[in-house]
Length: 338
Image (tube, rainbow, N blue to C red; front, top):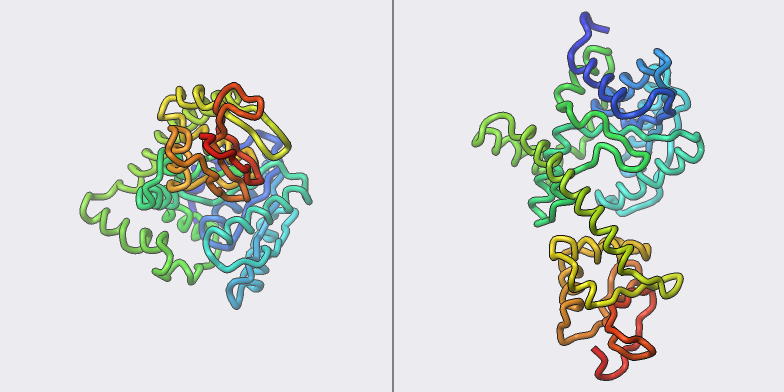
């Protein structure tokens, strides 16, 4: 290990202290890359000092020829650092898309949490990752929640390094004599995220000057604060409006739903759909739901993810008022009822 303690390493250790309470049991999600190894060595230091208990979880997606060897090498590095336990989880089969791989990775994290009894998984995302996430949200035309990027804490998942740059994690690995793995797929320009990292951000830096990534990360922090507040208001509205009509169905009275402020309506509808176990509706489906609520010519049904349908039901079948019905089975709407 090199000379004096670099500022980046001190910052990483302090960030973990700030993110998780003393005595916590954590698993570091480690791929063997610079970010996760920097996180692993910082957590291992705090474990040696008695601040927390730290293990590691390595997820092998099996999507690359050497993936098993890469996972084994990362596990060996974590054990050398003193992390215990160190678990290798094999992800379920997927087509290789980023979204599917992420879904399987988090399932693997959940299994590791259950197996070890740990309370947190530490993820190595950095400020650079956050900047890329904000630009991805802009490219997709997303709302405030997407512009908020990745939360520092969501459930058991903690991202202590969002204030550090990728160069910082590489400097930590150099100081700690840790040889990190460089994922060859990160150099492929097929994925939009890679094009943002390799082409767009450097071009924007050259045009707008340095500090762009930090500015984008600040945007995420500000948007996240707003999004959290609006989500809280939307959840309160949904709790007032939703009536559970079955194990997989709920109804919302349309006059009351139409009175919800426009800034909250989309959130209320997304939460209502998600409460039935479906994925959050995208822009097109959400627009269709809004039109259904507003009283468009069609009364539905609108097919959503997770076999959920949305239908506008009129004042019939004992109802005194028109409702939006969300359920896992299609509802046959009587002729002329809208």
